Length: 222
Image (tube, rainbow, N blue to C red; front, side, top):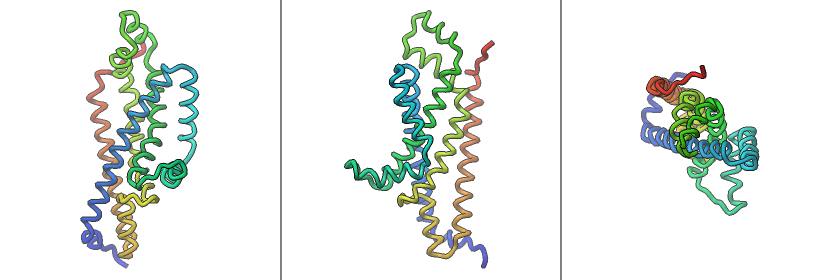
C-alpha cells in the first residue's frame, strides 16, 4: 500500500467546495457567537441579578454538555418544537450557540478585570452607560480578552468537523466520503489534518498581529 496523493488531486472540485463550506460555517458561526456572547456578557453585567442568574444557568448548561449532543438536539430535536432545519443552517445555529456561551464568559471576565476606578471616573464626568462601555470598557478589555478569544476561534474551527455527523457538506464529510470511495483513508485524513493545521497557524498569526496593533490600549493597575 502506497500513499497516493493523486487520488485527492482528481477530486479537487469537491474538496475545494467542502473547504469553502467549512470556512464559511466557521467564520459566520464565530461572528454570530462573538456578538451573542458579548450581548450576554453586557446583560449579565448590567441586567440585574435575575438576568444574571438566568443567563448564567444557560451558559452553565451549554458549557457543561458536549457540542455533539447540542448539535444533535438542534438538528434532530428541532422538529419536536416545530423547527425543521436543513443541515447547514442547523450547523450554523449550533456553532453560534455553543460558542456564545464561551465568548460570554470571556467578555464578562474582561469587563470585571477593568479597574473600577476607570469606570467611576467616566461616571464622574457624566458619561452614560453606553458611552462607558464604548469608550472605557471595550478599549481596555480588548487586550485582556484577545488571547482567549483567539483560542476560542480556533476551538470553533475544529468543532466544524463535528458537523459532518448531521451531513453538513464540509471538508470532513467530503474527505471522509472520498476516503471511503477510493479506499484512501490515510491520504484523506492527512489532507484534512493539514488543512486544519494551516488554518490554526494563520489564525494564530493574525491574533498575534492584532495584539501588536492593539497594544496601545494596554493599561496598568498601578
